Length: 418
Image (tube, rainbow, N blue to C red):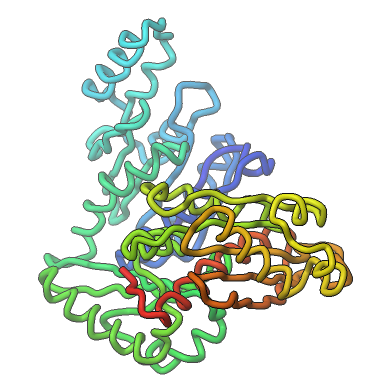
């Protein structure tokens, strides 16, 4: 099955919002083994949308639309598709009741145009919207499948995941099932990873293996087709073992794991507390950890010491050390980590300092970063990074490297990963 995604909305063409829906839908379709060859964006114009549909029908047997299902005049997706396919629109009474109850529940008057959201293509499978008002639709016609989805990500993502995706899975599985499993790597680039597993990529059949890079991380998605879930997992686990034998040292997690979530899990599992002293990251390390539920069991607190004087006053770093070695140095990172650990009374202290960019700092080129680790009473250790990229990208990558290095250091000391 070959798919095309058509995003409808002039705001996308004007650059007012990013087309994140296409990225999400593509990732979901790849798990089903459905090819996506084209993304199209069209404004709120019926003629241009109809032309886009005609083009898509020439090259895809699954066409997915996002946006244009709302109550206003510029929401014209289903009307245009109905006219193009010659399929009338009819009220879905369940959706209409849901909309009426929504307005009644919040004591707001319901304008007549809101009823428009309950109109669906006659004969379609209605996709329920549990996070908004406009339902989605799936219609099979003339050997093609048309799926209409709302625009807001908070509505489209659960609707596709739980309403549309199971229906598509039945279409492509031939009575069997498709299972996907994602391996997550850090500390190795996409190109290097691909070279390392090139033989696997060149000789894949079932399961398939697809690499993907995002925010300095790399993933490999393994997708297996089988008659049962157990059979699918047998295929996946065999391929996973092949991959891990080659690049397993870079793998930190699977599926929805993140570097911060795995770091917090490891710290909690080993009953370790942590504190941080941050310069270039300005609290980002602690902020990223704080997104993980339960982090209060390990994260005690820390410092944002952006200037030289703050490092002296808050952390007690000796002025002579900074004058001799500089702020962007191994010695400064080590002292930040050790002093944060001592002041906060934690098992681990982290120190992050560097030149995020775009200019040099303290005589060091942009992208020079030092991360210090003080674990127990051991001498602090440091790691140097030389990154290239935008300022905030470097800051986020520094946080991810800190998590990756910390887990490896703890593992070397005999602590268990979860």
